[in-house]
Length: 371
Image: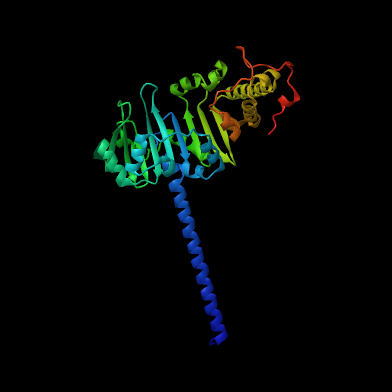
C-alpha cells in the first residue's frame, strides 16, 4: 500500500529524530571517553605507575586541584613571603617555568637505605620543552639513551646531579640517581607493585597523600625526635611494628581534612595504639583546659591546639589479613596562623611536663570530644 503524504512526512520526522538521538548519544559517549581519558592522564595512577616498587615511601600532590580550594588560599596566606631568589628568577626567565604557576601534579618515591638513598619523581606541568632543554644543556650535559634525551644538572652541593628526561611534552621524569635510563619507563607488575597499588587505590580521591612501607629507614625516622620536642618510647615502639602508614589530605572548605591510617598484621598492636592515642588526646584536652596552661599559654595558640585536638577521631578497621587504625583531624586556618611560630608565654614557665588539671578526675567535657 502506497504511503500518503502525511505518513511520508511522519516517517521522515522519525528518521530525523532517530538520527539526532544517535548523534547525541555518540557525542555524549565521545565526551565521556574524553573525560575518562583525561582523568586517567591526570590522575594519580598516571604518575604513580612510574615509581619503583622497591621504594620505602611515596608522595603525591595534585597542585591543579588544590589551587582552586579555599584551603589553598589560607595556606598561601600563611606561607612566609620573601623576595624571589635571584638564581630562581633567572631560571624562570630562561626556562619559562615557575612551579607555583605551571606545576600540575607531582609524585615522588624514596628508594634505598638511610646511607644510600635516592629519589625518583614524575611531574606533569605546563612546560616549555624547548626552553627547558636549551637551558639544561647550557648549564649541564645532554645525552641520548633508550630513546630519550637525558639531561644532568649539577645540584648545589655538587655531590650529585639532578637528571631528568621528558617522557612527553607535559611529563618529566627526575631523579638524583645515575640510573635514570632504567627508571624512565613504567614499573614491572609484581607482588610488590600490587601492594602499593592497593594503598594508592584507597587514597585516589585525595589530592595530596603519602604512603610509607615498613623499613629500617622508616623505623629510625619515626623513632627520632618529633616536632616540638615530643618523644614517646611507647609510641615509637608501636609505630615500628606497623607494616604500612598512609596519610591523606583533602580540602574541606578552608580546612584540610587529614586522615592517617596505620596498618599492622597484629590486632594487639592496633588496639594498643588506639588506646594510647585516645589517652593522649584526653590528656591534651585536659591539660589545655587546665588553669595553669590558661595562664601561661597565649590564648591564640591554646585555642588553635584545642581546636585540633577536639577535631581528632580514632577508630579501628578490619581489613582481612591486616588491622588498621584510622586517625582523623583538621588543619584549620587558626592552626596555620600559629604553626611555626614560637608560643608566647604569658608568665614564666618552669620546666615541667604537660600539666594535669588540679582535679585529676576527668571532667565531663574531657570525656566527650565535641565535633
